[in-house]
Amino acid sequence: MLVKTFGSAVQGVNAFTITVEVNVTPGTKYFLVGLPDNAIKESEQRIESALKHHGYRMPRQKVVINMAPADVRKEGSAYDLPIAIGILAASDQLLVDQLDRYLIMGELALDGELRPIKGVLPIAIQARKEGFKGFILPQQNAQEAAIVNNLDVIGVTNLKEAIDFLAGEKQITPIKIDTRDLFQTSMHQYAADFADVQGQENIKRALEIAAAGGHNVIMIGPPGAGKTMLAKRLPSILPPLNLHEALETTKIHSVAGKLGPQASLLAQRPFRAPHHTISDVALVGGGGNPQPGEISLSHNGVLFLDELPEFKRTVLEVMRQPLEERRVTISRARVTIDFPANFMLVASMNPCPCGYYNHPEKDCVCGPGVVQRYLNKVSGPLLDRIDLHVEVTPVSFDQMTATRKAETSADIRERVERAREWQTKRFEAFPDIHSNAMMPPQMVKDLCRINEAGRLLLKKAMEKLGLSARAYDRILKVSRTIADLAGSEEIKIEHLAEAIQYRSLDREGWAG
Image 1 (tube, rainbow, N blue to C red):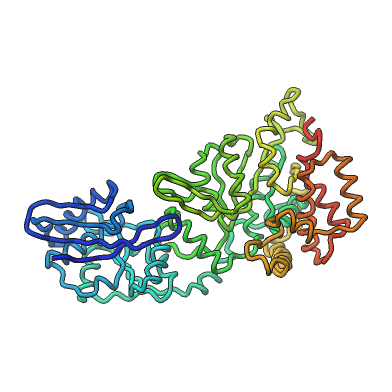
Image 2: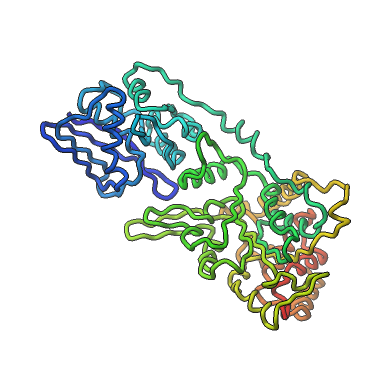
């Protein structure tokens, strides 16, 4: 007897349906075809043990299982459940007439318990799109799948529950969640707040500008000055995710298996801080079956690279294209996959190997030329994509022990959101541009006009401070954001003056 069940495979951040065809005929062998990987081939042992545990039998006949389309490689252990259900139906141990209405996925333990799987959200989205009535899956993944409405999400804990539900012997209420309510209640629940930071007002101001315009930032300062602490609080002042962004971010984390059991919609902007020993593939994504890397996991959020010069040069260089295009393309012999990578880069570094170059109290012990060599570890093309260079100085004892309450993240976020509203109106006609940082050079010329006094100030700054030509566009973009924060239609001379001071590393002889 031939029976069809339906599963799904994930490629990139999208899923496509896999038809599992099971045919039981006279004979003695078990065949699994359709380009399955080793994890799927091993499913025979897991399925046989799970069936026996629940009082069913593995047919001692010729069992042929085909996973269609047969020319696409299938990977992972999530096909255990649809194969087991197909075997039971094809061997007349399960009488059911609605297998074509449900998409089924899950990994089986030897005792028939179901283990969680990856990529549930894109699978659920595709199941709804293709008109399936419901999605039968492990209970731990049910909250994640329930984000998708108009789909009956049936969470089961073991093989027997799935069999009883399909046979009509057990009623399981589909899991429903109010996505908007869940989203609204958890969108501002950040663990860290700028109210905890004493002093460092100039750095907070720089991060506010970065958040308002979506600018990349690098902080240079001695150890213990608070660079990491400030960076960790940046997501709390970014505008909240909208529902579309939250869904897109959750999909990426789902595919990478980073959501964990009982997880649902991600309502907060991600903050990723990989260690400096990270490899190129771990950062940008890849592997035999391409998986998203750290730059995609920080999509719609912040990627924080602490101790930037300690990262391998090749790792930093692979970020250059994603920073420009805001997506990364992974190409393999059989498949090419696009992962989104629209993130804010926040980096921090010591000014020199010992950490105390330009320190107000401690002396630098680095020899001649060492400081410049250390800074040269970070390439010019990468620095070219960073708009704000901020010098961080240590906090004094008086500032640390001050009792005055610092400004909260909510207060700063309010100003950032107002500035973003200006940008939303400005870029209405350009669907791919959402913030000032994303403006191409021609648009900078059109939208960041400065008066004669401003032009003179910028000319003098570039000559006197020895600013490089690449600093010109960056200064204009940042000054446009500062004007937006001030609620000003035009870029005034004070906005330009503030933007100029955020180009430390472009100054000739900064580390001379």
